Amino acid sequence: MSVGLAFAVCLVAANLRTSLTGAGTLLPAIERGIGLASSWGGLLGTLPLLTFAATSPLVARASHRFGTARLLVAALGTLTVGTVVRSLPSVLCLFTGTVILSAAIAFGNVLLPALIRRSVPAHRVQGISALYVTVTGVTAAASSGISAPLSHTLPGPWRTALAWGVAFTVAAFLAWLPRMRGDRSHSDKPHSGNPHSSASVARSTVPWRSRLAW
Image 1 (cartoon, rainbow, N blue to C red):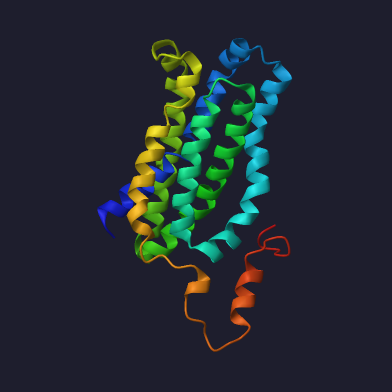
Image 2 (cartoon, one colour):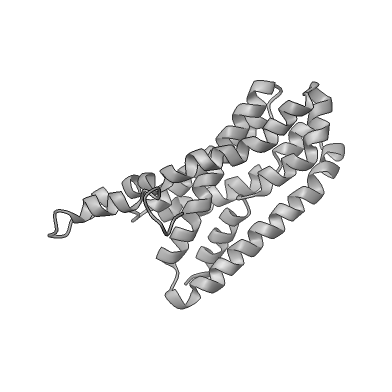
């Protein structure tokens, strides 16, 4: 396994919580800045979880159709857009951007472990998995710690602090863009002689009837 792949995995991991934990520490400033009621502030904090629940079951089918690396690159691009939209001076943009970036993170949450299993030698999967989980936790904690101080030092107070993590997102997007080459969806791959194989794979991606998934 190349060092470049490990670094690319870490860059994606750095995006899986950063934009969410930073927003949590900035919530009091957001409520004061735009006169947002505490109930709406609570909804803003809950939206990522609701979006995860609605979006995550769709990832397996989309990956099956478009290819895992392609879909991850699309998710990183969407995360960039959502992060920028959320920081624009509009309450509608604040909520819309939160939904967009949360959906992108939901895709990343599901796709990254799958890419690790596919791309990393079996004897290194556990080590790389531990590495990406650690990076996710460290960057989440760092975002919680620095977002509020950044809102006092950067121009644009909390709006700019909401978007600082986009630097990680752009870096991850650029790191994974060349890795789309050679990534094929299931429809691009040669089919086996079993006419039921593709149908069984498609069915297996839906978790609702799986006792193991529950």
